Length: 157
Image 1 (cartoon, rainbow, N blue to C red):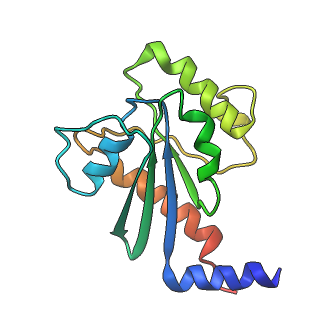
Image 2 (image 1 turned 30 degrees about the horizontal axis):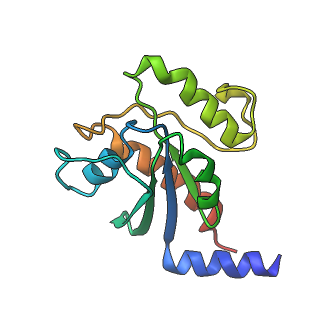
């Protein structure tokens, strides 16, 4: 318990957060990351591993990990969980043909039977509709996850 208290104090001082973005290939993870960082989104290639960007937002240092979503890479996703404070699961809701695949992959990650978010009691979650292309509501989603993480990690003793 003492180690946890020390780690919380260190994190509180640094206000550093590691966010992992996962989802199927072509879901928009890299586009979200680039849009949030103010970069050009007109030329985006598939992520063949991972991208890391460190951004500042609301006094937090965000280390955002964008991991490729190709089927051949999905078995490696769990390797990125260590030291991760929050998971952003990206869904391309316009790609209706792959929504079931998306649900199955998320269910596998959460060790649940299906994408029944009301039944997930072991994780805090929020669904935030947004657009990677226009940037609409991206900040709302990032702000929610920062509020949730900070309420659990950056607490005063």
